[in-house]
Amino acid sequence: MPLLYLSELSLLENSDDTSARTIPPAPIIPPLNPVDTPLTPGDTVSQIIGYSSPWIDLCSPDPLIANISRQVLNIEIAYASFCGIGNIILPGPRSYSSGSVENDGLVQYARAIQEALTIGSYIQIAIHIPMYGDDEFKEMMGDLRPFARDFNSPRKTKENKEVDLFETWDAWNLIRSVCKYNSRLSVGKKPIQSFQFPHFADM
Image (cartoon, rainbow, N blue to C red; front, side):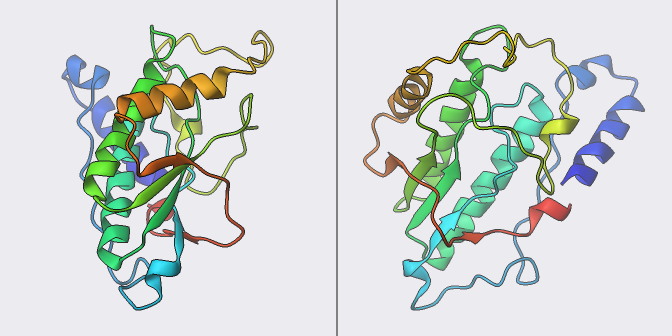
C-alpha cells in the first residue's frame, strides 16, 4: 500500500494543478481476488472472528491516506460479509484530532464506521479501544502513517499532553453517537486468534 500511496504523490508533484495537491483524488483500490486471501465462503466461516487491517488510519490528516484507508476497510467488510463472517474487530482511532477542530479526526473515523455498518448489514463490529491513554505507536508492514503529509494539524505530542482518563470514553461515546447507537457496534478486546486480510499491505 505504501507503493500505491507514493506513486499517487509522485503524480501530484508532477501535476501543474495546485488545487489537486491540496485535496488529491484518491486511487481506486482493486477488490480482493482469490490469490489475495485464502478466505472463502464455507460452513465454518461464521465461527471466525475477523480483524481488519491494523495499519489503516481513518483519522489521518492526510486526505489521501484517509480515503485509501476507508476504501480498504469497506472492501474488507464487504468481502467478510460475502464470505459469511459474523464478527469483525476494527482497530480503534489512532488519533483524536486531524485538523483545526479538536475531534475532527474522530468524527472522520466515526463516519467511516457508520459506512462500514451499512455495507455489512448483519456483521457485528467491535472497536478495539484501550481503557485510557494512547496505544504506543508501533511500525507495522504496510503502514501508511509514517508517510502522511504535514497539514499543520495541531496534534498533541506525548510530551505536552496529559493523560485524560476519560478521553477514550469520550471517543467511544462520540463514535456510537454518530452511528446512532447501532446495536451491532460495540467495544471489543483483541482476540487470541483471528483472521486478517493480507492483501493490501504489500501494495
